[in-house]
Length: 292
Ligand code: GUN
Image 1 (cartoon, rainbow, N blue to C red):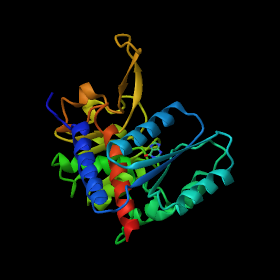
Image 2 (cartoon, rainbow, N blue to C red; image 1 turned 90 degrees about the horizontal axis):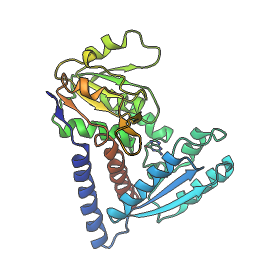
Image 3 (cartoon, rainbow, N blue to C red; image 1 turned 45 degrees about the vertical axis):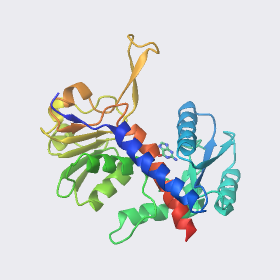
Image 4 (cartoon, helix red, strand yellow; image 1 turned 60 degrees about the vertical axis):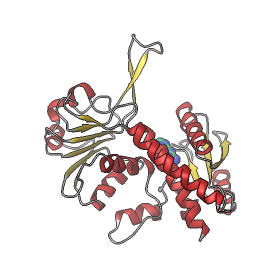
């Protein structure tokens, strides 16, 4: 293995330790505990797991969490009314509506209903719009892309002037990751399903953020020697040697790419822990913004 492993678990723990210390200092100064409201519509098992992990992180860091499960057949009005109640609740500093929502709901309208000072996911159109514009500052940056940039910086990877390739253009990861890299002065290419000759595009990259949802998609011979590889993918690969019958792999063929890259994140233990750490950081920031 030639690549340096980027330890997302350790880097996330450091972020969470800093947040916990700031929360303790706030409370000691007589200020409120930051509070995060989670909204889960329906019974998706993966979403329920992610929300549970977010609630646990709040408890671990001395913050409050308020969970609001809604049935899968909730109406648009019911979901938006809940968001408006949370907007008005002073004990709630951050509002997280777990995505994806059931198909009958209008995601954009739900996200638009969130008070932008409580938009800890950074998905409100005003926050995303500010992220996309020069000279504007979003109040919050989406947690997974924020975590990817933090991993690069903590590993000493130079972003300014680098050729960066983002694989995937989702609203949650790919697009905001590309916008953040532009703000960090990288030269950015976004690869998607209609991109021609993807291996050749990836070969030019000093930094790759892979969030395309295809198991082990990025191959060793696509990677520029020394490149930094951030793997956002989480895919279940059948594995008879494991008790549960599968193991988690990313969107990067780790065994091949680790021999060529300069830096690489593992799956699990790379980007995954960063999403929650950055959500906690955003929730603390929300409380600080609302203090003022
Ligand atoms: N679904 C997958 N990732 C995320 C995320 O970061 N935030 C929310 N709200 N939903 C998600």
